[in-house]
Length: 427
Image 1 (tube, one colour):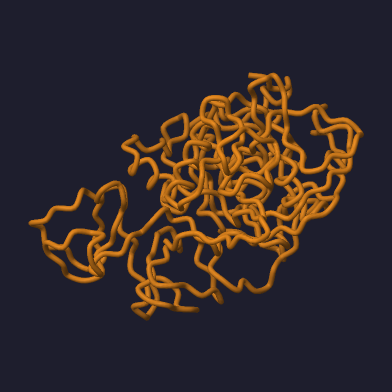
Image 2 (tube, one colour):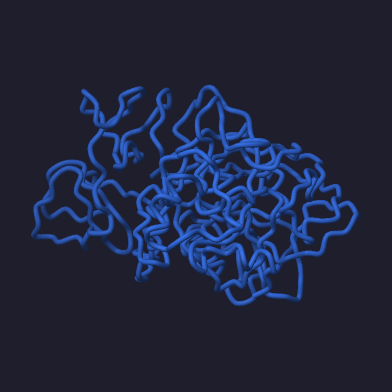
C-alpha cells in the first residue's frame, strides 16, 4: 500500500486510524427536513424514521416536529434492534413495531398480526434499504481550484500542483452511510456484519453511527446491491473496479452512471470546500468551533481521556484539538452542524472512499475527472474521529481496495441526469 512516510507515522488506525483532512462551512440556521440521523429541533419526521438522540436510537410513531425523543409525548419509541431480527414465522403472533426478515427483506409489523406473510398485505411495512431521497442534497456544478489552496505544515506532495477543475451538478448524501443501512445489505445477502470494534477491541457503536471497517470493495458491492434494490443498474464492475454505464459497459464519464455510486475525488473536495472555498476544514480555518460549540467529531480531550488508558500515550505527532466534542469514538451521523451545502461530517467521524484511483496532479484544467492509474490504490478523503490538528480537506489518502480501519467509511453520490426523476425508496 502506498502511503507517504509521514502518513504512515500518523496512522493510528494501525493503532487507531489514518491522518486527517477536513474542511469548512457556514452554520445553517434552519434545517427544513430530517436529512441527518441525529434528531434536530425544527426538522420534520415521517412515521418510521429513525434518529439518534441522547445516546439512543428512536423511531417516529407518526409525523412529528419538535417532539424530542424521550420527551413528554408518545411521538417516538425506542428503535427496534435490527441485528436481532429473525426470519418471519407463520405461527408466531407479532406485535406492532416488531421486525422480521422475509425473502431477503426486512419488515416491521404495523399492528398485531398472525399468519399474514410480509409482502402480502398491509400488516407489514417493508423497511427497504434505509437510503432515502431526502438525505441527498444537490451540489450545483462549477469551476474551482483543486489542491492545497491553503498551505500548512501538514500538506503532502500529492496535493500539488493546484489546478482548475470544472464539475457538472451532482447529488451527494448529506450523511455518511450508517451501520443501520450497511447492516441491512449484509443481512439481506447472507454476510456477517462488519465489525464495529476498534483494533483494541473497543466497541464504537452501530445504528446511526457511520459504518466503519469498510473496504473499497465492500463499498462498491454495497452500492451495486443498493442499485439492484432500487431497480437501477450496477455502477461498478466488481472485478476490475471500473464504473459502468446504463448498458453495463466500462466508462470514465460519471454522467453515464445512472444509479448510486461513490463520489469522485474532485466532487468530494468541491462539496467539502463548499464549491471551492479556501478553507482547511469543514468548519473553516482554525479551531473546530461554530458559535462556540464543537463543529466536528475529531481527536480531542474526550478522545485522549478515553483511549490513553487503553492504548498508552498518544504519539508525538498527534496534537489533539483542545475541546470536548462529547464523542471519544464515532458519533451518530449528523451530530454536528452541516456546511453551507447541507452536508454533515465532511471533516472527521469517518474517512470516506471515493471512486478514484490516485491521479497525478498537473496544472492542466480538468472536466469531471475520474482518477486513473496503473496502481490499484483508491483515494479516501475527510479524516476521522481519531485525527487531530493535522487534519485538512485536501489530504488525499491512497489505500488498496481491500484496506480498512475502524475509521474508514463511505458516502453516496448520484449524477444529475436531465430527464430522469431521482427518487429513493422510503425507509
